[in-house]
Length: 475
Image 1: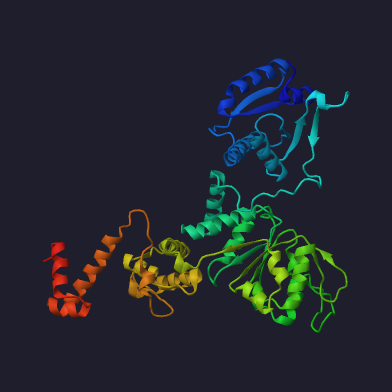
Image 2: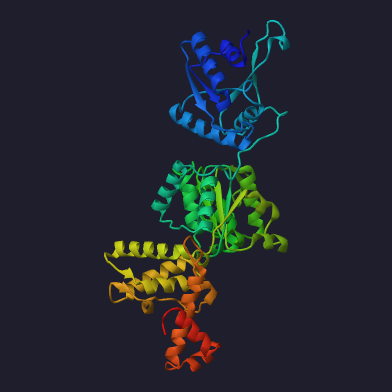
């Protein structure tokens, strides 16, 4: 019998290592193929990699298996040049290989072997397929990316520890994972959305820290703090004498951040003329200093942030639609009041940092932590930091009590906001019974132990109180 597609490729192309991807049903064929390769090409190492799928037509399963295997191969052979033979195996496997190679996720040459009857005499039976030529559609890697691997989680955890980022709330972790994914794609400018004090600058630092420009500077600009007539000069620079007070040349923030990252905080405050110049900088990598007719090339990744609703500003004509669309990705950072599970963690972290700086050993009383959870935090994490620091400064003892928490305004919390988040082990009926018991006992205290008076305070009958207390063996 003539050589099959794999042996045909190996007859025309030498390789140091050959990996055969094999599903359970193809195990016997894979073993025979490996033996044939060893016999014909004794200098090449052959290994069978199992793709343990019961259904060999499962595209998603195949993609995940190929990704997993290639990640390990790439660690073992970081400098290898890869080729993929797509003439053997199932059409589903072929499709997955093509998608992974075309997107650049697996950098490899695609090889196709053709039966001799379809090849003119004297022509090679194996040819390279250029999947990047214009006739093929462009395939991009998914922005959401695959599920985080252990290595990804380790990178995120390390960055959070180094930058002081704390949070276990699911919505917060989702935003953090998105930031990690975007950090890996250097050509994406990122927009951070969130209330004032919610941690947008920390997210910008996180993206920069994990990105390919981590060794270069991150330059921070608060767009809302620059006088309108100086915005363009501050961002793009100016030439000497270009306006009154321009005594020397000024390179501007974009030039300062060249080959690094520029963090534009409160981008919604930029005036429209500056927005037009910013769009040019993002689109073409060029800036034009004030007073100059020459464009200056810059290589800057921009991370922008705002607490404003840019979509509404676009509709109102105060923010450019094309600039809004130019940010290929946005991350919504949840406010602290929706992250109740994180408040004790953050409070403990902030107090620990304060203790370390000032050589104290102060702690929060459990009742104080409950007060922190109940508070609505209009100023988000920034306000929590201030409350913790001031409370620690003024509390006379080592244990900070609820009355010693220095809120800016008295605690006026909607009772609904004080309810715990449902979680594993939570039992709603037991929780409601505890609330009922607390209210009945308090009503009894206020009424001097007279059930009829307590019932009037609660809007129920004395019999209802009596039955409830009997049911709990409290009569």
